[in-house]
Image 1 (tube, rainbow, N blue to C red):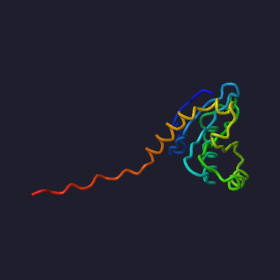
Image 2: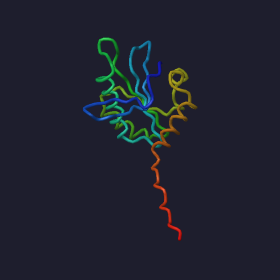
Image 3: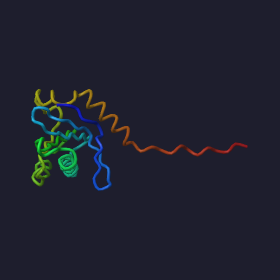
Image 4: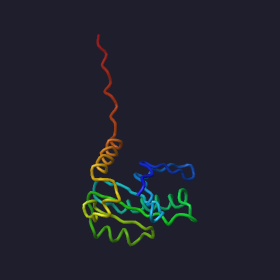
Length: 140
């Protein structure tokens, strides 16, 4: 797979959205959206990645050249029962996996654990709320 971008920006109707990682599968001629989630899988993640898959299909993919976009959601934890219900309601081609559960071939097509860890840490830093500086006391 070829790396297309990190925090890949898509504009739709004046709104901006950012895909964590976007790849292009060079033999299947399709885009692959990868979303990284630190923490337990939430059903809302399916809506988010499904939306991103549809946006890449509509805004980036050339239908006469490229196969339909697929999505991969990588989580640090998941509840299989919740996941089954969430996936039952989606028509998007989406897979949800724990990185450690992927086959050697699947892992080889993705960034290394170290690269993913660096991206996850960077995302966590970017999402931390910043505290305003404490007000300075006047000294007399």
